Amino acid sequence: MFLELLIRRNPSFVEAAMALHQQGYVPANSYVIDLDSVERNASVFQEEAGKCGLATFAMTKQVGRHSGFCQAVKSGGIDRSVAVDMNCAIACNKAGLPTGHLGHLVQVPGQEAEFAANILKPDYWTVFSHTKAKEAATASCRAGRVQNLLARIQAKGDTFYRGHEGGFDADRIVDVARQIDSLDGGRFAGITTFPALLYDHKTGTVQPTPNLATLQRADRLLKAAGYTDMEVNAPGTTSSVVLHALADAGATQCEPGNGLHGTTPLHAVEDLPEDPAVLYLTEVSHKHGGMAYCYGGGLYIDPVFPKYQVRSLVSSEPTVCRSALRDVEIPDYSAIDYYAMIDASPPREPHSGDSVVFGFRGQAFVTRAFVVGIRGVSAGCPRVTTIENSFGQPVLWPGNPQ
Image (cartoon, rainbow, N blue to C red; front, side, top):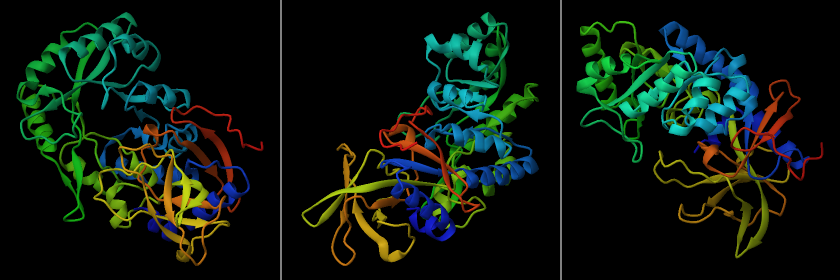
């Protein structure tokens, strides 16, 4: 979906990744990140967020919580992360990007609340229930802290991805706020939902979900009850071009993820300020039955898009020539993605060892792919920084010549 965008807007990055692969510096089955572009994207985003009065927390899961990504985002002016789960928070914290928001989307497990309160010390901690609020407050009290708690709210008609459901009744938010404030170690700090915005394939635009109206209604109820100093956290499909709409709707916090590497759904159909800064690279293994099989492991097609013909660049040398594009068949979700199958018809048949580049809207943290940072693309001297796993941990890649 994003390969054409990469070829058109960041061709030097594509060629650099292929060259480094052919030189033996980038392994097959890798999400590769252009850290220079990420830093620029973060700077662009943060400047716009500042104009809108929005606090920004960076989501890092899509690129495997890579330490270099965390550092690039911080260099671009975003100094806090939002953690999708505890693993995410730990990785970002270790990389020097402190936890701004924890517990959303995934609640903190009960046995890990003490660690979160004592070590991570998040600025904000989302809870879906009174049980989780009490766990967070109790752990924070023991740590000698008063924790800012965000209440995840929901109302009839709100939109949730299956498996993401949960939260307090939005119509009872004032009672919820008072109950949270009554907890030793806890302070009611605001409200949140997900997703507040979604991409609409029919119109090719980003639109508010019913959840955003739920946030606004709860905000009015709270203000009427005297809660005037609180946060409204409104994540979902966040790029710099939607920030004014979020601010106008009353949001105070935003959480870019794919926006920081230029791969929100809107980036696929419209040129936005953020450049594409991530690709998936692998290599041809063997041929069989008129197909060239390339190594998988990170072949994740985000179901946010309708089905489409997947294509890849296949070449033994760096190129962004469209003559090197090939149709690809990705295994069904029910299968393990050991390989993908590339059309191997002539001319320019693929060969074993050829570099293969895809443009995915990745979710590297749910794959078994490597995550590789590259610096120096913009200066014409690309180099690999670190090769890490999906937990943001450096790995000893067997083929690494260094």
